[in-house]
Image 1 (cartoon, rainbow, N blue to C red):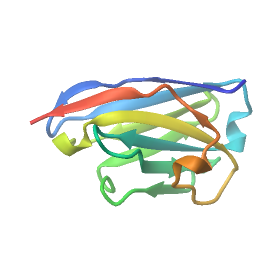
Image 2: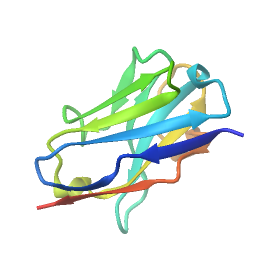
Image 3: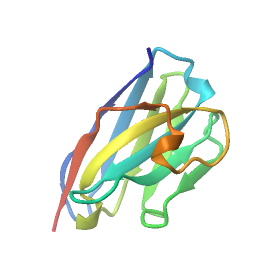
Image 4: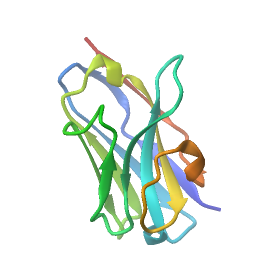
Length: 125
């Protein structure tokens, strides 16, 4: 059974930074495309970022491009989301997700096979 366990959420002031981590167990990590999604109150879950199996190809939502960086460490079976210049509108529950693929562009919730539990990120103004 593949499990994704997230850490690193919390409260930060606008303009600050946070790093989210997601540890994956129970599968062959390098065989997954990894993604991050978020869901703000009253809104649908939305795509944030994606990284291919090697870490060499990334994809970002326009709303966070240039402020967030996705990365992965295949030796540690982990994916990260470094968030800079945070804004109040970034407040949401953030989820990591895994898709059984090594490449491609996957931006829909339904594309992904496994999900983390989600962790709140709150950005105060």
